Image (cartoon, rainbow, N blue to C red; front, side):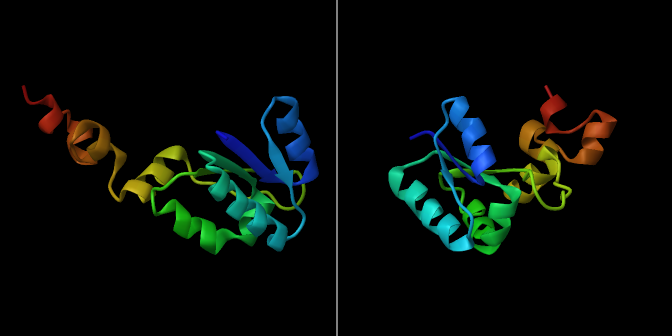
Length: 122
């Protein structure tokens, strides 16, 4: 299994129409069971709705830091308050532990703005 959606009924139905399997959950206990099942089934990506992710946030945040698969993705939920999510650059910076410029170009953000750094040395 490449991808699995763990969310409310509406999101699971929507992804199902696109051919992505999913498990509809309503409680944190159901979400935890679905998460454990996804890991055992060998899912590579698990997509959670924000409301479901919030119920398992401590466990799932710790999992993200391991670097293991499945990779986690979080979608806004249809119901409840909308939360502000970090940009992709911020998430990469948190996961890698250094500014993305150093990861991609081998230079610091200041060197990037000045056009210097190890990547520009020839």
